[in-house]
Structure formats: structure tokens, C-alpha cells
Image 1 (tube, one colour):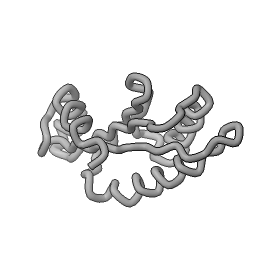
Image 2 (cartoon, rainbow, N blue to C red):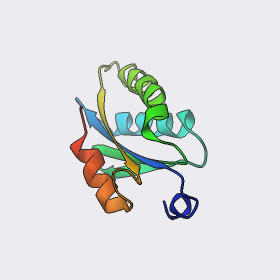
Image 3 (cartoon, rainbow, N blue to C red):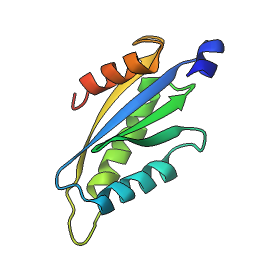
Length: 115
């Protein structure tokens, strides 16, 4: 975030809320999907169960929409021990428009979950 601030570039923070019967195996599968579907330089991790968070440097929210929709569709297809149907709500916040610190961006992104 500080690097994009210095360069006057956008930064998008995404909060992912897993919904449904979420098992540890589901969390691991979603983490693997996050790691494989986005750029190496993107930062991602488990925020607090059942939330994941990811930061996309030099990316505004609009171009992320198609990629995040594909990610949502792939999450729904995850089959763990014969159980599919996991849903993910995604909330986005973009710096500097929605704020310029992580706390503010997290609050905005969480408020936008499911919209």
C-alpha cells in the first residue's frame, strides 16, 4: 500500500467471506485457488475465519470485477469430500478513493460484502 501511495497508483483490497458449510479442507482449497489465480506480487491470506483478504497493487476495482467473478464461480465448483456449493461474498475497496490506510480499506470492503 505504501509503495502504491508513493507512486500515486491505485491499490485494491478485496475481502472474501466464505459462506456455507466451510471445512478446513474448503479453506485450504480456497487458499490454493487464491494463490494460483492472481499475480505472484498480490498479497493474500486468511484474515479471520471465514474471511480471506487480498491486496492488488496498481489495480483499481473495475478491472478486478471479471477476475473476481471467475474466482467466485470456481469457488462454487470446489468439491471437497463430495460437498460442493460453497459461496463467497466479495467486498472491494480501492485506495485512494475509499481511504489510504489498511484499517479504513478493510472497513469499507467488509461493508461492501455481498453487494
